[in-house]
Image (cartoon, rainbow, N blue to C red; front, side):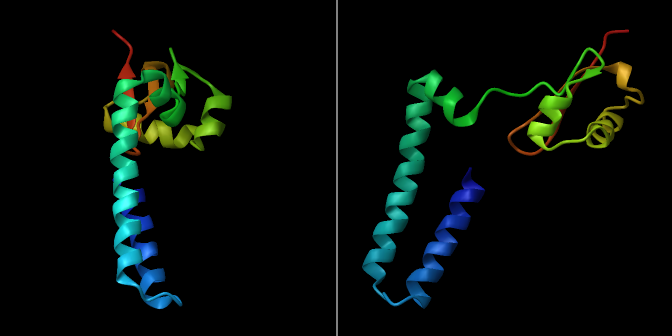
Length: 116
């Protein structure tokens, strides 16, 4: 989320300096507004868990007990090769060794192995 906010701030700064309005006051107010909205949303998500679920959505289970969920993989824009790469990083070689595969918000993939 911070990365997206920084991109928006950079774009806002660019428009403030290169646009028709060279007002630093407007630029400063807009940056303060963006950061305030980010902080407010984080507090609202803490206070109202249903709002957090709506804004962030529930984690998608891409593989459950060795069986891929093609719909969830398509929605998450992940293919089976991506999951297997993440599984190999955890020392798993086969699809049947994966109990659950869940994409994380930071771009990583959580892989839970089956119990032997």
